[in-house]
Image (cartoon, rainbow, N blue to C red; front, side, top):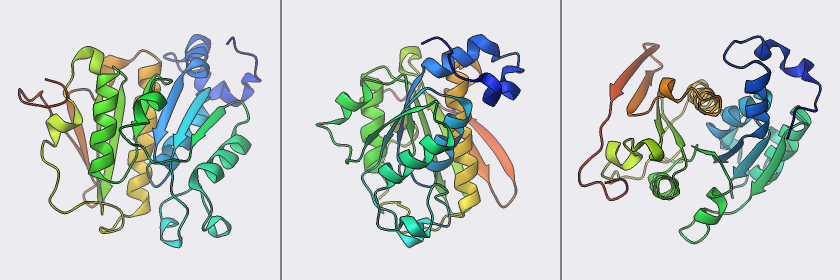
Length: 247
């Protein structure tokens, strides 16, 4: 669709040389799926909507709990026990009416994930467990859909970008063995600000990809953020010859 909205909302980013009116059109036309609307998904969704990404899918089957509120910025006390997907959609639409939001208040499975992903240009992995991460990674690579992965634990976070059409390393190349103890937000601590940083960076990497700045994305790299030291390290990753997903 051609730009038909009031561009005053986007005036400051239109001044950026890498965006301008043509880049803003790319953002309006883009279709991004965010898997998980929690600590990572909240800031990712917010900044995608703020940038004017025109079509956002939101997949989350969970309900809001009191323990979510230290990091899941889309929700408040009045939202407890309500559907994350429905509440997130309502708040994002109020935040930016220009954006179309489609929700999938269901658990991702082998049976439904391909049908959901096929409608999107980029997928953001903002879930909190390896089983779901591996599932999303397999489906995205099989469908040649770029994937932006983020994760947080206590005071650290990681970020990587997977681009199947460029034959980059995938998540299972980086983490070939699922941890013996399931690492979920229910069993380890998270400081909300750490999730905010990584979720915001996921939105940034997604926007860069939409704008055609793939060569600047974290492909074949993993960013590691240490919140205590306030440091960022970037490690190079490589494909594993025996990877069951991308070999």
